[in-house]
Image 1 (cartoon, rainbow over the protein chains, first blue to last red):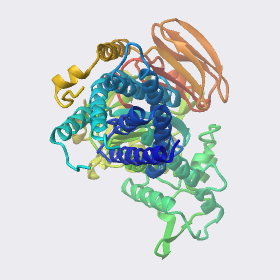
Image 2: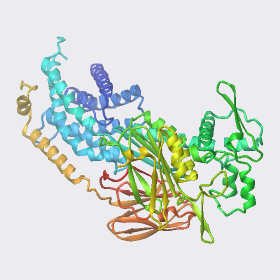
Image 3: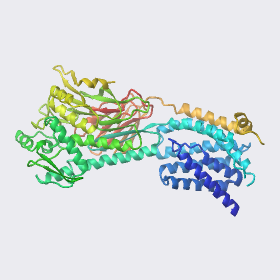
Image 4: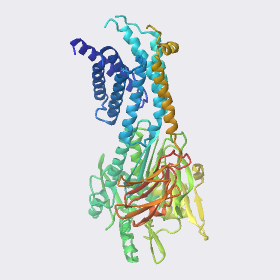
Length: 164
Length: 341
Length: 135
């Protein structure tokens, strides 16, 4: 990585961490259901800087947010890792899909993978009989429009970043 | 670089929040855990949209139950009742705030029930071998044990704020806090759960307290077991926020000798099992009070039991006796009916 | 591509055919998941634990009996007609045996001396089944 790239990754980490913490402050959010803005930053990193940068942004963001929110090492943190990792892998693969997906489509897949990754982690941690798993269809259905909207935000931000 | 908040992206963000938040609010579910504690099965339920926090609170609530059990049990050499008995009439300094509060409440209900409930009946319970090896004692053993029982002969002193001493004033006197400590522990476990949710049930073997309501918005629904048939519910209660209920029944623990049943609910004044009532259910604002009064009302019998409950504000009760044909006869305080489903 | 991303029409135009197929597939998948995961109401199994460890899981759609080792004695548990009961236990008060059969989701049979719990799982909570029992 060039110094330039490292600086950009660091900037995106800061933005993603801030958004992750801001999201955790919204009243009564489920710990495993986020608006997905922090993930949107990972997508932005993928769009502009590539898969390795997206991995760096996601990993450092999850770690920093865990540290700052005091969830590090706990089950909430495990869910964040599972969701972040699933979304990242899915988006990197989706970006190479044939026929091509737009960044909106990649975002939808990342959003859905985030939900599924967290549900899988909940199932593994707390047992598959968990009543929260009955929410899976709602969470997955919500993930699709959320993915489109966050994807649109990423594309809009990307356009405004031309000076970068 | 232009710094300008674009109006439409902001609107889109607001839309995003509006889409996501209803999905967040849909989730309150009942997180429950069962475990054996205080000689019974405890089941704790907490309504929460956050299973991680809920599970952690359930851990702490069970830890609190075990902590209170260790302090109050009669069956451990290191518990405070054991320390008080060993002191043999001398003052015991540094009694824990838990035992201080439980014993104070127990003695108050002993006074209000005229000794039908008595936390100093430890030697009597031991004479019958409850709960491990119950056996029929001879009359002399029972009489000797009854001589050690007497709630009036317990003394408390406050040496300094928070430094409490107690003494048991009769030779051979032993505490049995079981009839009130379990309910008190249930109340404290509910306090722990209230830290994470307004809605919970703590149930230790039928002594229970409810806070808030069910996830569907209705009051918690509590079944009362049929005294003749443990597989049946003979009555359902709707308990509002901050209500406790406890039941004492002669069907819970008993043994038979020559066709006669001897159960574990002893009259502290005679030393023998109380015979008239088969089941006493008491509703109170807290479980410690419900627990002790269920025993007291059971021992007092149908008429005196209902009369004593009516004299207490905030208490409602249902006592069940059998008629000559073996059918259930209900005796209840006037206000009990409003809790019926 | 300089399409308007902040109107529904603009968003729809920005989606490639592959995007639309993926989104539709995920929505259909969530509906399928919802149908598949729909709670049936009836419990599906009796889970037996001793000291918190699962020692047996009995499907309720097959009658049968199983003997498990409790802390104190062997305990016989029987499934019959979608209900479960403890039929034999050498514990002192045999409260578990006297509790009889249980058939609703979430209901429990407990044997304290054996540290044994039989719990009916699966299915939706029935609003008419009490949240707790006193007695």
